[in-house]
Length: 376
Image 1 (tube, rainbow, N blue to C red):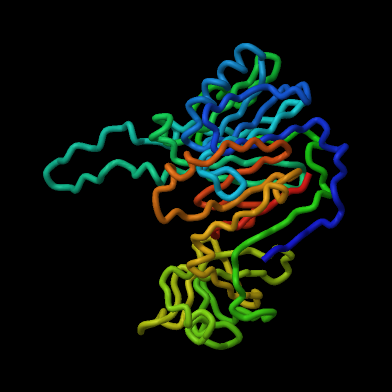
Image 2 (cartoon, rainbow, N blue to C red):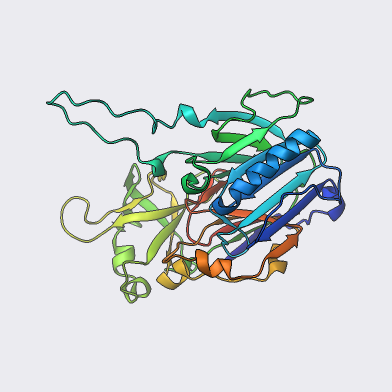
């Protein structure tokens, strides 16, 4: 499913101070200053395997050329959820860096567990997979994205890899230049991305009830009890398209539009129907969902094939765009397969993916293969 917004195209002259480049399957990656522009800043998004080299390159460029550099470890690089790649954004004007949070302020893995007093249970240390991370990118005053970062413990020795170097001629407003971070907000220079740019949304959702929109008639919290005055679970249990697949690998999602709102949100159904008891007729949405009586609701599914099978799109589809994607789920170990592929270098292409999804203007996008493209 593809949806386009903002039909007015952004003229190419508007991004003359912005240069983007993506490399997938590099053999010996080297981060180099482009010749096309005279950059002062670079935003570098790298998969874990390439981070050691990217970090060394970033240090060298900062020390030798006094560049502002931001580096983040991500799960995948576009196109096609590549697990081996680097994506670069170079700008002639510096990026604005704000709202950084040190990793040490959230990561307590290095703190020893409490000693047992012989009575109370001692819990294990925090699971490293559960540490929250966020890289917010403001593309202009109207468009922003929040990205979850990759676990990089096996490539860099740090749970997350997120840092920036601020040259001496720029004010370090957060005071965390050169530090390990878990959160950071960056803003592209003014006019890098037009506020009238075209935005394209793509997903792998199949409508369960094509062209039908229903109303929530009973709900509490993230639980939907009734839709159109019928038990909410019936909209799943009595849908032949969904039931005929008969696979637990099928995922179900909804679009939810609350009354007096122009924003349509997207949530996964995490439980629904079956069994007995008070909750038998309900469906439970993602914890972030807050339906109210009168909310408009639509039902969709992702089949097992669409959930795991990458859709290999032409590189041209990613040209002159910034692409954000929810990384496809892996069913097996694929690194050896990617190592056999030829290196590909693509100019005017930039984008990355996260296994946990991303937010675009506050709306969650976390289904496999789902993506947003900002055309520049």
